[in-house]
Amino acid sequence: MTDVVVRAVGAATTDDPAIVAAAGLLRRGEVVAFPTETVYGLGADALNPAAIERIYLAKGRPSHNPLIVHVADLAAAQALTAQWPSTATQLAERYWPGPLTIVLPKHPSVPDSVTAGLTSVALRIPSHPIALALMRASGRPLAAPSANRSEGVSPTTAEHVRTSLGDRIPLILDGGPTTVGIESTVLDLTAARPRLLRPGMLSQADLEAVIGPIDLVRSADDDAARPAPGMLDRHYATRARLVLVGSNDGDAVRQLVGSARTRGETIGAVLIDGHRVGSVDQSITLPGDPTEYARGLYAALHTLDAAGVGLILLQQPPGSAAWDGIRDRLRRAAHP
Ligand code: TXA
Ligand code: MG
Image (spheres, rainbow, N blue to C red):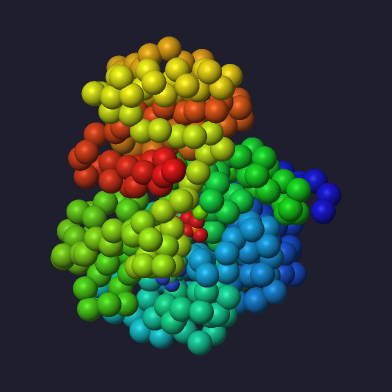
């Protein structure tokens, strides 16, 4: 495929020329990358199996990892489900549009390739005006994983998408940097008790405030025993080796840095404001507020990867609940 077209979107209305072009591609079964408030998604018509196939191909995504379906309104979400519990209504009223994905029993109209053969479907109404305009203009629900090659770091700018998928997709809608910065919180409502499958910036406590107690699913190290598809531990990986470092790890860090230097590697670091680690070649400092930290995290990882560092030292963030989603992504990115 020839090089991708990147188009800025001005007004995010259904008659914006870039939106019209993107909607046309989607209706013809093509894929289009677009911004959501969390990360950029690689979208395709969720009801067209040939279009879904293109998503898996472009990403190199294993077919056992199901996709999130994005819709523009509640009626469209309900149309894709076989059951709609009252807890879904409560959560939707409070947090949609927004960075929450809800897993529910799927309607027969949802292709098996979207759900990787599961009887459930993951749904979300994103809040980004470009995502909403695109769904309204195309008239389609959009299956959209993060717009990066499988297992890479999710994109938070159009440029990140271009670097990862530029030779594999026809169009990227550029809406500037995303604001949430990490992927949506995923909540499973198919079991008797709600289960948190993937933490995000919308916290477990935020959800429990609306629907009561939620079980936390811990992803298993053993691939075969993983409780939910896509909860593979190796995920969100940088090319560089990424090591989480705590404040008492000084000796271990000196050793790591020493052996990286012996191999001739350059070394990067992602720090939290007010902290430092020994001598590195390039360090990026992120704010100490979790909301702002999440917004900048993936761009920092993309920057260090693009700079070609061999080792990234990542300062361990606080253990409090506000950092749950961030710690989850860092733990996976640092998985050996
Ligand atoms: O913020 C986000 O969620 C972004 C934007 C583009 O919306 N999307 C995203 O998609 O992160 P992806 O494909 O990278 O992650 C989808 C997650 C995976 O962990 C997958 O296993 C889970 O959702 N998922 C999808 N369908 C599921 C289902 N039926 N049951 C359980 N988990 C499901
Ligand atoms: Mg992803």
